[in-house]
Image (cartoon, rainbow, N blue to C red; front, side, top):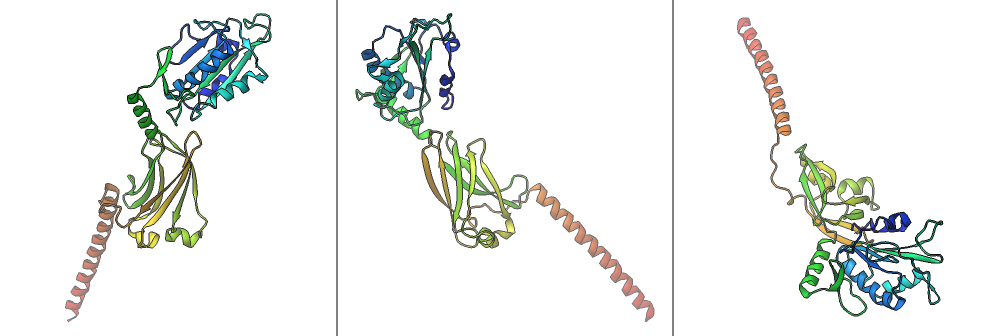
Length: 317
């Protein structure tokens, strides 16, 4: 389940409950209205660990094994509201992943939910910080309709996936694909996880920025990902020393992931050694050809003028 979709459960009504699948799966777990609070206290943290470690899913209490409403459960557990009680149970999972809770109460005479009761729906989002450990010190995953302990191999795979879900940015200088004389700064994501609210700054500032702006310079980019890298024209090829100076500059990046975790990254950039030798592209070659033609035209005119001058001089003699 995509990280931003799990919150859709907050808008559920009895209509959404009527559209539940007719059997449990790796994304759905059903518990009947007869399930005791002691049993839920045991099951919910285990299900949370399993769903967070397996891409997300739904835990529904107050429906039978075929996903049909069978009355609902009490809205109060001891002296706590059902929601507060659930929050405390999920806080025992380490670390806590993204989730949303909805208690759906009776609405109208046609409702299948009993009076003063509710159906509990918990939605678990795909977690960028897996694996998650249940209170019994075990890690769980979904295996069909069940939550089962994860093997060591599976845990290693989850840790590896977590690294791939960490946004990592890399910057480089390159020539523009459209205009080979233009130098671009390109910042792209090396992993599939996008970087959000990316703040870009330099230390020291390139000459053209320090002279015009001063020390207080930064750029805020809403998102950088593999499909949407950040690209900014920096200079023309021949102006690099005037724009950047002769020393490398430090690019500073501050950003966060979709779980609002903060990251800081620094990278040294040297435009004097970071670019391959210049290659004359078609657009540049066209300009050179035009310039050469203009030069040859001027030379021909000069030659004609000189020839005429020589001819006149000879006749005068």
